[in-house]
Length: 222
Image (cartoon, rainbow, N blue to C red; front, side):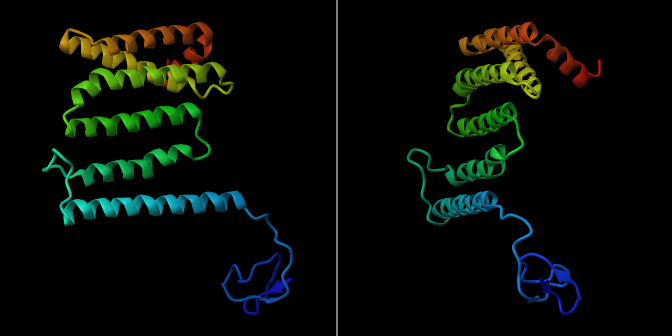
């Protein structure tokens, strides 16, 4: 057992410094009191490597764009490094957080899709592709997300997925109706998204009626 010569306390385990005053301990160490968390160390190392790569790419992109003046062909006035920075920072602080333990699959899928849709819309606006993105890409991605959440809700035994399924259905139905009211004509992709949303909502009511009712009561206090 080791001992702190200043605090006059005995310290079990294999510590080298006193946990109270950080002075060097005397005596012989023992077996560690707690097991070493090798998996956590590996995750920490992976996170540091990926963080270094992310910031390295960000700095290189900003340098090539603003210092050297490197431009994309056909977009001479576009500072592409700002878009790169947006994606990298979103990847670092948004997307990577979805892979942390403790978050359900439905939550990860829904949040990840929302982040990517927002980033893609901004990028599409810059490159003049916003209309085709809203008319085609967004409804297809939403329909796929709602379908994935429906499957997860059917196999989920803890009841943690229903809120994401209902949120996805809401995101599918409301934009479709707004689009129809504003433009009086709904694109095929949005029509498919609306149909999928209604069908899967009906399926959730049929197969998980009590969970759906309980979710509405919990959310709206009814």
